Amino acid sequence: MSLTRSTWTDLTDERLLAQCEVDTYRASGPGGQKRNKTSSAVRLRHPPTSLLVIAEESRSQHENKAKALIRIRKALYLELRDAIDLATAAQRPGWTEALTAAGRLDMGKRDPRFWPAVGVALDVLVAVEGRVSDAAAALGVTTGNLVGFLEEDPKVWQQANVVRARFGQKSLKT
Image 1: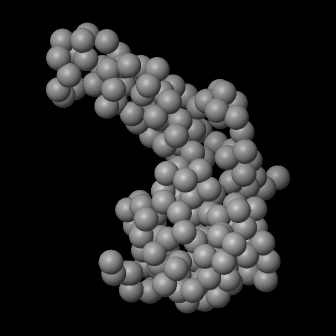
Image 2 (image 1 turned 90 degrees about the vertical axis):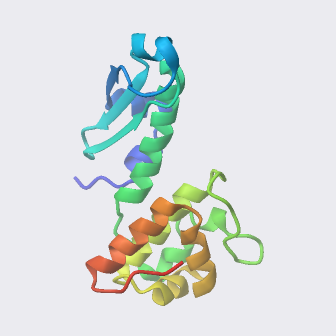
């Protein structure tokens, strides 16, 4: 049975967290005596996908767990690729919701539609062997619009360049 990215991204926070191994530990660094006495840092491991994230910036274990859960979701979109039919790529769930009425990608990385759209964009980029112009054409946007979208988050930009390098393409320049 082949599991897709949506197998995990469609789960509620509680169900996704239930699939993760949760480790708590004492984080080092600034934060005073309280930080050094409590195990507030959180490490989440998602065994089915081998993804690992940490959150240790807050002195609250609860806040760090919430941040780690957000990070594991982002990692699922960044790291897991779904096979995609280029003929129907522009109609994929996660992509159609991200487009404006004019058919452009115009959102920041804090928009809840951003990460699902990133997953689709990277899936298409893999399908076209890293060629951004071909990916943009398959997704129904301009090359400049797609590049601007990929630039919104440094990790997305880095992952796009990892895909391009895998297929012998030059890195995209900012």
